[in-house]
Structure formats: structure tokens, C-alpha cells
Length: 326
Ligand code: SF4
Image (tube, rainbow, N blue to C red; front, side):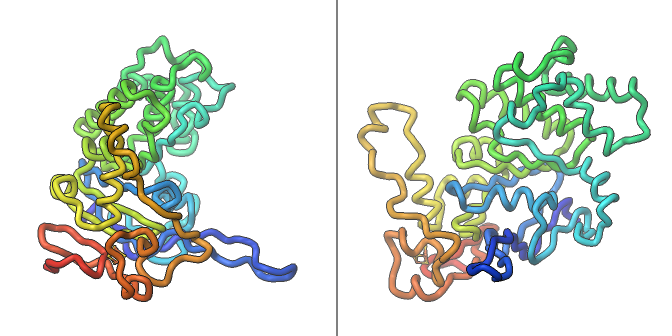
């Protein structure tokens, strides 16, 4: 049985209705997402800003309540777990945020921040045991005990993200949602944090959901890649197959928009960013979510939404014109 099973998940937000006395209405953000995740595996979720990947990540932890579908944790639907039990169970699934400094309380020392979740996850633990767990978590992320008494303003961005990872690890999680965990860091520090996450995954058999718009980092970390466009999964594939040849026109456009490290080559290839306006989630297209920007769009694409169909090699894609259904 997979550690995490996501079945046809929908997520939306309540927004005010139009008109003075109108009822709030639900604005759908994520539609019909399904996947499984095993221990020791990483699912990379990619897509442009606003595609729903962070909303999905939070819904997996029930920080955003789903509006449809199921999230099964070791076979149990999290919607059926009482709120108090769910708070304790959150020790098993944790999240790391994009902005490490904003995620830390400036008035708390590093050790206090790291051990704080234990008040919920292990309320019976004494002060000394809590401190030992906190120091052990700091060791795991490569921060020696001299960091324990520091405050967030005394940390670099990379150190602050390590503290965020230590705080996620202190409850001994099995799953960590990494929501753009390196995008606020310098490139050299990004590499250190990515290597740290991969080492921790090996040591602790962690399952990771790695949300990022940075395809180079996803290529390094993920075992499977899931591409989202306007709240829908448009392609899913094993990492090697995906990066060797993305099938969906949106995936191909994302790949083409990756900046070249060489500034000369980057200048020469200007204009490869995805052209056109991203449709509003308030007025989503009735056909393919990529139709208004797709270079291969045909009239059918604007009126008929393509289903996510299984293909050979454990892949799937949502496009009317991709052949090779398994
Ligand atoms: S269904 Fe049509 S618009 Fe959508 S990706 Fe395929 S070709 Fe492009």
C-alpha cells in the first residue's frame, strides 16, 4: 500500500458572491488530481506561478480542506480523522516553506523554533527530552549546537532553511512537502539544500513532494514529475522519460523557457518564454487549459477538454493529439 494515495482531489476557496446579499461561492483551483507516493520517493510538481501546485501541497496536509476527492494516508482517508487526532498525526507529514526567514518567529531562538512542534506532536515529552530532540534535528541538517541559541536575524538564508528543515524533521515525519524550498536562495546555497534533502531522504526513507518552478532542481530530485497547468495535471511521467522527451505541448514550452546558464546563449534564445496570457481561474476555458497559448491548438481544443490518458512507460498526458495509449 502506498504511503500517500491521492484520488481525484479538488481544492477550491470560498470567495464573496457577486451582489450585496449573494452567498459566497467556491472558486475551484485544483481539479481532479490523482497520484500515489511511496517511502523514499520524490514526486516533483512543476508549473507556472498560479497553476495550483502550492494549493495542492497544502491540501495534501489538509491545511486547505479539499472540496472533493480523497487523500489517503496509509490507507485511511484523512477526512475521517478527528481534528485532534489529525493535529497529532501531522508529525508524520510536514511542510517546508519557500521563505525560510518568514517562516521563523523572530522572537524565538533556533532551538525554541525547532522544538515548538513537539508541544503538539509529543506533549508528554519533558523539557530535556525536547531539547535533545531539537539538537539532534539540528545535527541532522548540519547545524552544530552553537546555532541553538541564535535568533533568525543572525542566520543566512541557507541556514534559516536548514532550521526550517530541522523543524520539519523533529517530529520524525514520513512525508515532507517541500514548497519551493530553494527558490529564495542563492544558486550555490540551493545546491547545498537540495543535496541535504536528498541525503535526508536516503537516511530516513522520506517521501517528498517537491513543488518547484525550477525544472533543473526537479530533474535532480524527483523520481516522478507531474506537470500542472491552471489547476489540472497535464502530464505525469518518470523523471528520465520526462526530461528526455516531454510529451505535452505545455511541458515542452516549460522546458524551452528554462534559462540557459551561458549568458550569450541565453541572449540568443530570447522569446522562448510561453507566449500569451494565462487564463483567469475566474473564467477558465471550457476546452484544454493550454488552448489559448498552445502552438498546436486546433478548433477542437477550445471546445473539448482532453482527459489525462495513460500512455506507455508509466506516463500519462492530457492532449487530444498525443498518441500511444497503453
Ligand atoms: S489539446 Fe490542443 S491545445 Fe491542448 S495541448 Fe493538446 S494540442 Fe495543445
